[in-house]
Amino acid sequence: MEKDIQLPFYVRASLFFVGLYALISMLSIAQGIIIPLVFSTFLAIVLHPVVHLLERMKINRVVAISIALILSILVIASLGTFLVSQASRFSESWPILVEKFTEIVNQSISWASGYFDISSEKIIDWIAKSKGELININSSSIGQTLVYVGSGVFGLILLPVYIFMILFYQPLILEFFRRLFGSGNRKEVSAIITETKTVIQRYISGLFIEAIIMTVLNSSVLLILGIEYAILLGVIGAILNVIPYIGGIVAVALPMIIAVVTKSSAWYAVYVLAGYYFIQLVDNNYIVPKIVASKVKINALVSIIVVFAFGALWGIPGMFVSIPLTAIIKLIFDHIEPLKPWGFLLGDTMPSFTDIKFHLTKKAKK
Image 1 (cartoon, rainbow, N blue to C red):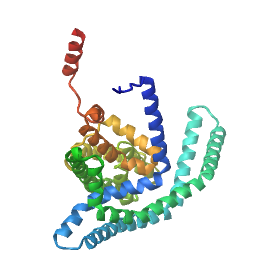
Image 2: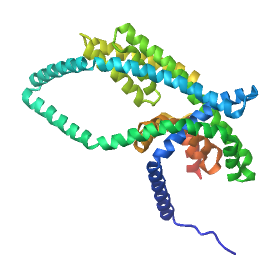
Image 3: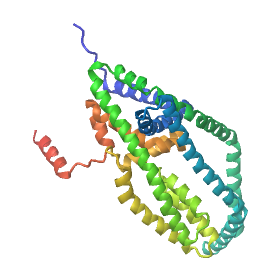
Image 4: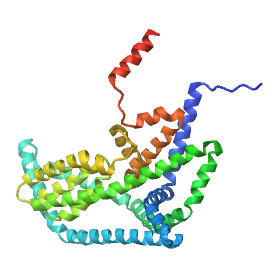
């Protein structure tokens, strides 16, 4: 009778880390294929209810998918046109902003040289040296940047094609996953697929509504304070807010810099910070729980880690998809018995200290 071979722990750990390294390497190499597919899958899941509604109205499936895609493209194109018009207005004022910023830098250099007893020439030389190094770094990475931009444009062109194909072949894809894991697990696989669709639909739809609300709130605060380019900065802040924690910091930094450069008093930057802080309180305590809330919860520590991890793996697009992908991974872990502890670790269900103390005391008595 054959016996199961039990490998030592260090062998199993080595195999695990080698496999993990190979997986991460493949994900990094294939990012040009994977990222458009991930975005296409998310958007296809969001558009599926629209396609289903059109099909119930006796519209042909191909026509229904085409209508949903065209409407989505029109909405995105309208937003893009608006952003381009606002950005062109911002670019016209760019030389003036640079000149004002240079004045502020010179004043800061004079203050620093007097306060720290350092000659202003040394500070200027240090800034010039740092600037030169930055230019050299940027020059060496121009080719890589062009490659990224080119692949991004190519991915955007492929996006509608992927979405159409995923929506059209949805029954085939779902049946593939059901057959892949055998007839015995068919019910469990169907439950995971259904919950995944629900999570993605609620999350993406909620983010879209949240972005509209945040755009209105951000722009209103900046308009009240008289900050230039208020609408453009409000839209950028709403988009950056999709990236947990990090996006909010960048979103408030941009209007603060504009306030410092364009306003006579630095207090306007403080007012912007206070206004955005109030908006974040509203967002975290009302908008996100009521609108973006999903039944799959990811704790703050894991959220920050996955944002940085996916950012290192796939860049800025990776930051945007980090949370929904982690939510899907947690959902799968929660349905597989050996992986349930990992699902618990990703979640935000905090056990009480009484339960922990009870289990430790019980274990000590044994």
